[in-house]
Image (cartoon, rainbow, N blue to C red; front, side, top):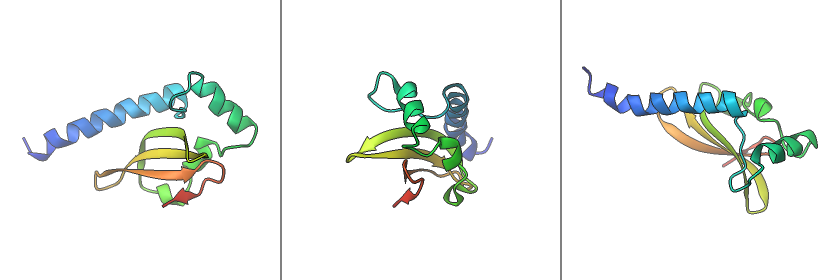
Length: 105
């Protein structure tokens, strides 16, 4: 057995859990709110945020898998926090302005 396989199992397991969560819950949550899904849906329907489905088409996300997506308010601004898995197996976080869909670097 390769030494790399045991190191990849937690990543693969996390990916499967995140994928299931995205399918079941639509991939959006507002941390700290009791009515997460309703709030996100209202913001989206009012045109205050870019739908997550649309954001995931952004060229900056090409060749990456989304492990987790959260809608958060940071410094008074709504942002999507995405946990991404790249082609080399590295996991990292990227932030996008939820109102415009533009990356925040």
